Image 1: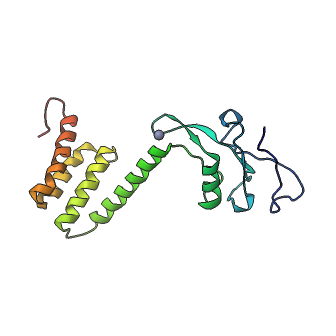
Image 2: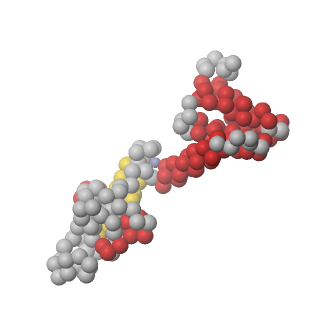
Image 3: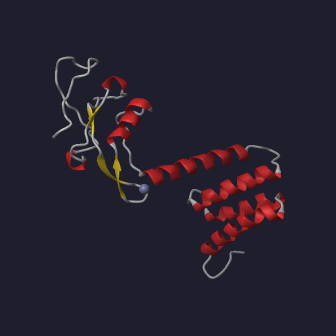
Length: 180
Ligand SMILES: [Zn+2]
């Protein structure tokens, strides 16, 4: 395998050449000739550091599609972002983006939920979060009722697009027509 010329980092057993790979990236998953050297001194690990990163094949837990967890990405995760070396990547980039979006919607929803007297704008924002969370299957479909309540105070024009989505969700929930 090219790309493997291990130079033992001073911080770890100086003088003893060694190569460690990710335990969660077994050989069949590795793409040949993609190794880049790690800086072990920047890694956080509980058992073993990793001396080299490879591009590795993964199957996304979200959409079941294959994707590559790139060596450079791993370096970024484990040496710059401070992720534990034991942390694995289970989702492709679009699915990760989507999840981050959902996490943001959840946070906004919670923040708005705790406001006692919401302005119409805040109600609209909360309704949008609620809808997005229903569409992402985080909330139950019955929560469309809550969206309806939230947008009651919202001016007709601003409410139309949301109502369209509410009706669509409710139509999908009850076969044979709009619910209620
Ligand atoms: Zn995916």
